[in-house]
Length: 168
Image (cartoon, rainbow, N blue to C red):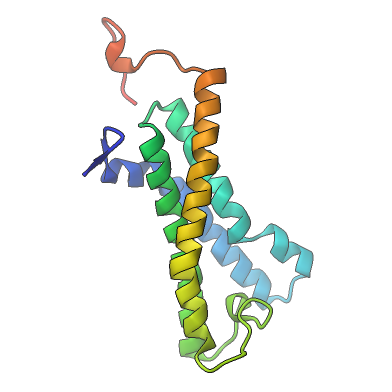
């Protein structure tokens, strides 16, 4: 499957540093949760904050490397947000299996109002979390790509340059 002229594997390779960034934020937030860090720190070190930032960074990388177009923005948004929500679901599952509460199962984020509340929380992340964040990220990223292409054009594609063989 080719998206924006590039196979999915190249998209995954392009996004690898951003996947690592999101995983690092996930681990850091978990560590701060175990250390009972102050509440303001959880608002700063948050996957909800870093996922849109990762999408914007992906769009910057797409623009600078002239890697695809708006379809690639949508795919990057989907992949990054699916990864983010999967990390959160993994933390919830680990908490349920071990019986040890973590920041992702704290009552303020996963209220125990009904039986099997964790399943409802997981379902929310896998449906609304991925769906809405992908749509918002794609819209925000497409707008940024449009602005970058208008305000900071990168010039012709490497294949369009005569006599040069640049790799992207």
